Length: 119
Image (cartoon, rainbow, N blue to C red):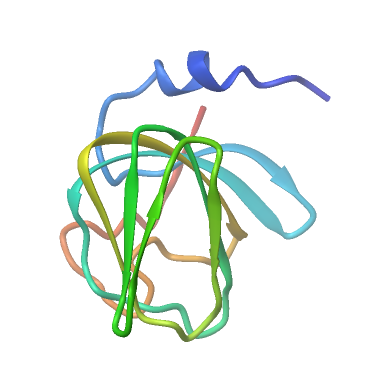
């Protein structure tokens, strides 16, 4: 049992769209990720995802609407729902998702991170 200081943990890496494992809870990972720019449209067949904005702003696009997230706000994207995260400027996000979750979901491309680093 160790505490995690989010500001210190985010300061330990600078790459965008490359989640890091900060902890584990049951069958889920607590991941930290820096986002900047536009990701890819994707969905997850089996996993829900929680996005909690720690610093900056995040636009979560869905096919039928858009949701802006400010620091301290989160959104849960249900499995099967296509989404596109967009960060006009760098933002820090905490993710809570099952250990089986691939960051690009049903899409495999140059942004896919199969082997996550631990902080």
